[in-house]
Image 1 (tube, rainbow, N blue to C red):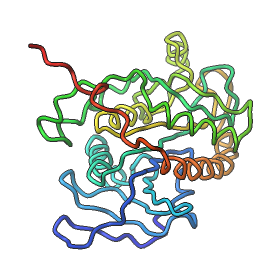
Image 2 (image 1 turned 30 degrees about the vertical axis):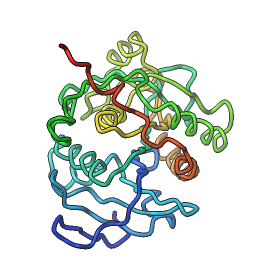
Image 3 (image 1 turned 60 degrees about the vertical axis):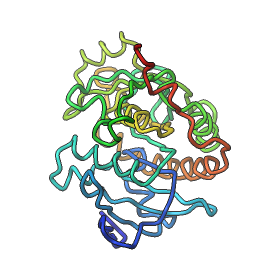
Length: 290
């Protein structure tokens, strides 16, 4: 898919990739639309202690630099890298690059009856059913002392980024199409859920179901990155209403265009925040036992 030549930076090379502290880790809500837009000027891969990174796109908006990773960094998985190693390469690379703020996203199935097709949800909590993924990658990425953490997830995302995303999404999509707050159910992936599973998720308090965002919420907290996401409702969850693949394909062009507008405006506002590192040890480190 890459529309730009990819520069590879080895660990021993004197040349360094362009610098940014904000990264848009996009899912199907944006797909490759930002990576192929005029807002991105170059792309690179980086050899890190965790292996070769996925393609990292670099751009600027109103003078503010940002990185972008498409489809949750799945390009590494597509090249034959196992899923957990792919996740480590994505998040280890963002830590290695010094990223402090991450904007995530996806498309999702709606469980909450208040959500309409094409609505946006800035979710703030999650329930994770993907037990195949590591709960923590801190020991893989951080030094031994820094990895002795037990992160809290109340709140589960960064409220400041969430507020900005909500305001920008309201501007783009309009009142009545945006929902601030919501519980994501992260399914195990590999298939769509059964109708019975969706009924269970609804009983548990889930508002929407997707496959990657809660992992990103957890990993970013472990690595001391601020994170919030904007999720598009692309279909009703299985068994609640009927839909087909055309439902998705009809929605994607609008969702992708809106995502770019939302993300870039949010990047510009993040740049002007007074406090860029906000997670802090109070949410991450367990007190001494004695």
